[in-house]
Image 1 (tube, rainbow, N blue to C red):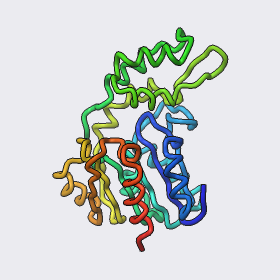
Image 2: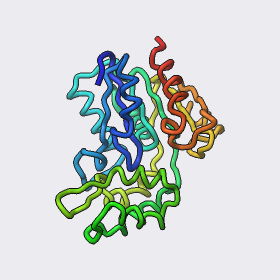
Image 3: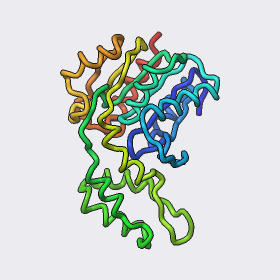
Length: 247
């Protein structure tokens, strides 16, 4: 949507490009915005292969197919790691990165209970969305997180519920995904935004970030947790708009 230099937005785990519609419409006042569903998420195909290298390759293929130049990439969480791996691997015309609450390091698995809930949801025997939501209550107490997950539940056909994300493959590969650091480095101008109530980027990670991205700056939104853009949307938009508009 929109016109101008391209801005590609990459969602996080269990998300989709649709989660960014509101902010995308604002960015579209000055940019041509691409809302990407990464593989095994949203409306993109399910694949038995799932890694950051593959998602970075998918991104490189999109950029090539669209003939994009002077590109900015905004990635949240998993999307942020995809953007980092792409920046350190491909020589494409990316001029700015915005990485949201993700550092170039390995992480413990934060989503084990959620994955257990999704894997045991037994959709073949569920007759309503309410039954699935009730099942997830035992695995995730936060109603906002459950609502976020439920956005990915749809009627594949009459009487048959399905997840848009590829639960078995994500479950199988999640440990390898979170264990993976970023290899290489990139001189692309980079803005890392951390949620002050989140532990994904620690203040002491700034030196690590600058090892991989020497021209990076780090900004904290203290009122927000991991979903920075959803918890502090006005502040998030203002910071990112200023950064994107700067020469």
